[in-house]
Image (tube, rainbow, N blue to C red):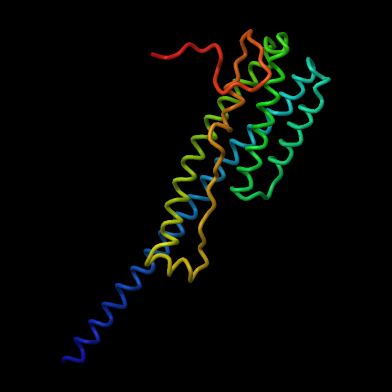
Length: 207
């Protein structure tokens, strides 16, 4: 009788361990899938951003064709950022370079009043601003999911399961503070400047 009790206890322990193992594994797979899905959303928004830039460059070229260096810089940075195969960390670096190039392009535009009044140029600026908002929201969601996954992968007991099935930590998508929104924040008023302003020049201070 005692042998049967011991056997039942052992079986119960094994069943519990199996259930815990399955639960940990399923939780890790779910988090990994959520991270992958949230990264695809970032990719969609970045592609929308990249698609706006050729039209922006062509519009600026119509008024400032001799600003060849700045235009080529934006085009090259856009091509690098749009190239497939980059990891989230690599993509963030490329997007930072692109945003800095866009900041210089908008600074150049400040010297051309006719360009700043061009409706196509203004619409592209608004579209970029909207896209930046969506990128920022998608980035926050993605990084939160990455943090949740990485915590599971690095802590006991889920790290044991992660190691057994090759589930690894994910990369964050980190952009430099203030860089991703620098271009949309450029003022398009009448005041000219030679450097990209950090905030709209004609927006009154809030109370």
